[in-house]
Length: 322
Ligand code: UT7
Image (tube, rainbow, N blue to C red; front, side, top):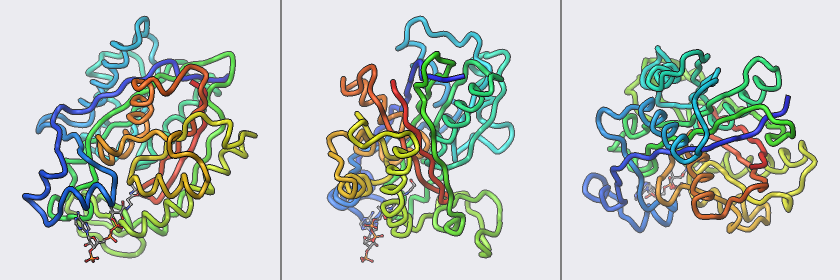
């Protein structure tokens, strides 16, 4: 059975944090942040706004903006997140409860910034297996609650937000083949640990905050994502010119520019959410996609390539027709 995306919704918190806010707490400035990352501002959830709350609001926005769409018959909810409300119960089950979706399987997917695309690939598989028919795929994060605001190399990057798509069976294939991959040897280069542990044979004394070796992750992303775009196109017998939009995870504008340049692909045909929302991890791709729709750029019948990458280090890519 083929599948399609029948609706999309996004929610970002109201509280806007401009770059200048950081000038009062760490040794940085607006010019450095904009030129090194492309970020101008980001959104931060309020004290009692946890990841499931952002996810629920994204679903509510999906319903508001897609008349005729209902939650009736939803039989599976996947929440991709690195910032779950807690480890157990999973975030998806809180979404199920808050939205009163009566009969849905619920899982969280932990694949950091690649999580949303991983979740789409899983949803496509469930529909292909004919075990499920109406699936909510959500990418939601409250990274601000896990950010070390004394670490100037990471705290300026992160923002909070959520995006959701509804995936259903389709007579034509609108979600094409995906690719996934991981290099766990880089685990220590981007981690968030709630309990003491060992990563790559090194002891981690947990502080519940995100730790990142930005330089290593940057280099890995630029070196690998260029080839992964090509691999994904080949897998689907498509060419770069067949794409209307390319959406890379919005980690850093310089990564997006470097990948576009290496592919010789116009930057004007890439959608990002980095400038207004910062790095929202699993939410960055649906937010960029929704911004593209609202700007009148993404049109019916367009082909989009989505490619997420992050902590693991891991990546997942998929091509869709909207
Ligand atoms: O979403 C998951 C995947 N994550 C990523 O893909 C993140 C990838 N990495 C990055 O986006 C970048 O590496 C960062 C934005 C994190 C850092 O940018 P960079 O160009 O790699 O900077 P750097 O780490 O090489 O640091 C250059 C200088 C250093 O100073 P010195 O040692 O040259 O004196 C840093 O201490 O910039 C300094 N620096 C800052 N200066 C002002 C680091 N952070 C800041 C800051 N403000 N916020």
